[in-house]
Amino acid sequence: MSKSLPLRISPFFIARIKQNHKLLSSSFSSSSSALHESSSESFESPSLDAVHMTDSCIKRMKELQSSDNKMLRLSVETGGCSGFQYVFDLDDKTNPDDRAFVREGVKLVVDDISYDFVKGATVDYVEELIRSAFVVTTNPSAVGGCSCKSSFMVKL
Image (cartoon, rainbow, N blue to C red):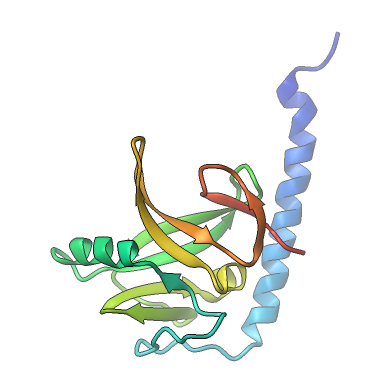
């Protein structure tokens, strides 16, 4: 009798998770030696390496900031259907390893490890029939992803 589907595909997923973990670990060691800006006064530069925010993202963050003075945190974790996934949170503090991008008084922070995966990316806020969410619309470091735009595959 043949094995059930979960038993047949679990070795594939385990190998993929280990591979992604190694990529994140190697990214951390190379980024920790690189010079980074962690100042809370950092402004979004016009360079290709900056993480950009659309007008829709700015508008929604200003609405959210009316009650609290929060900033948008973007991070990358292993997982999702394509290997890596974007995680958005509202945060009220920065960490020493954060890079800050500010536009029109709205602050987006990205930790150093995640930054290597989202350099040059654009963050948008979309409202659809089934959900409203912050999404990464373009990411030069990604080669593909799923249709929900919450996970991606990284260029090697």
